[in-house]
Amino acid sequence: MPSHVSADRSAAQPPPRGSVDALISQTRRLLGDVDAVRRDGLADDSDPEGRWQRALCDLAVHQLNDLDEHLALLRDGPQPAVPETAPPHPRTAPGEPRPDSLLSRVGSAAWNLLTDEATWSGELYQILGRDPAAPPLTLDELPALVHEDDQAGLTAMVTDCLIDGKPIDGEFRIVRPDGGTRTVHMMGEPVLDTDGTTASMWAVLRDVSELRRSQRTVSETRDSLQRRRHIAQTEHRLAVELQEAVLPPWRGALRFPHGGPETLDIAAHYLPPSASALMGGNWYDALELSDGQTLLSVGDLTGQGVTVTSGMAMLLGAMRGMTVAGAQPGQLMGWLNQLLDASVQPTLAGAVCCRYNPGTRTLVWAQAGHPAPLLFRSGTGCALTPPHGVLLGATSGATYEQAEETLEPGDLLLLHTEGLVPRHTGAAAQHRLLALAPRFAEARTAQDCVRTVVEEFGEIEREDDACVLVARIY
Image (cartoon, rainbow, N blue to C red; front, side, top):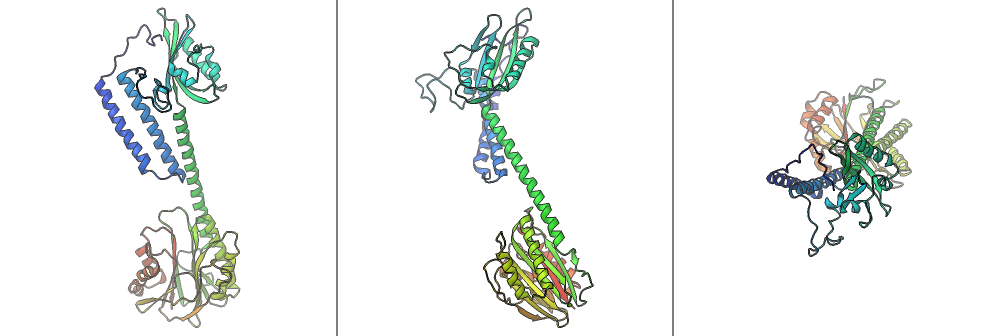
């Protein structure tokens, strides 16, 4: 093969062996670290982010392997053929490089323009899938191997090299005799004669098919991850807008449209999940009825996302409509159970529904698989004894009992959904809430009580959203 060093340039000296050895050691340590992360530290491939992370690590390992072998070639120079006595690598013939080694993916060629002779390395035959016994192709014949969409680009690169002396640095696809397609990166330069004319051209061709596949995988998984994040952000925005449109348009102390009962002070708060961007199906509600009574309710539809939020809106709307029509809490729960049981997408919901009569200070309530209201009186608290009731949507034809409680001036009623006390459920959560009784006794308004709850539990990491509603009796 003609030298690729032109007549007016001297050959570069090889780098010191010790400095290359140091680079090889650094590369191999880094390769080991990246490979360990790929094998042991990555999430599984069940989601776009996990696939994107693994694709990035695969690409990094691929490139570090190439860098290691490039540096080894720089240190040792071209390797002699493997002796026939050496054990061959599986899937290779004796004397051939391994299919995954750098040597098997880098070939060279030279074309003498004066004699029209071409010289190819054995590796180039292997890359292009040509018979080593066949003569190498001339520059005029080379485009016959190239994908038809890339032939014009290769011709332009070769013409610029031979006529204008421009280096070749570009990629094109070749079609092998077996029908397979490879992506080849070609670098080359013209070799000048003593009179400055182009006498020949040399080129190094590298099979970069695997590298480009790895890069495409990274790009595709990144795009998939970005689409997923965009969808999640859109769902979150829609869920928030839907929730704000459905829940009572107030934060803090409730103001009824017509003034409401003067003997009832109500406040509530919604606490979103800490980590998840998806909203849940929690709700609170207070509705002034035409007969002077007040509807109080909290509940939680299972699941997260805009579908659950829309289901919550449907359930809350049905509850308001049935209550305005005169349904009592027990009957109301039975009808809501039928509604969820007949829905296209089966789901479950827990709820508490209370109807307060200010004239008699009586509270009639029912529950569906939900924490009972807490009653605070004279500095102490207790949970009301729950009437029978299963989760809404759990079984067809379920019946729901209702209970009645007489309240006194100064009493505080607290309704809440599961998850209000993070990492505590059932009796443990109830105990934490009842422990706030002394602080509630010192509070002047329902809003002060809600603020106490939020200060106590609002800053703790929570997996699900939650609601709290406080009603103070005057």
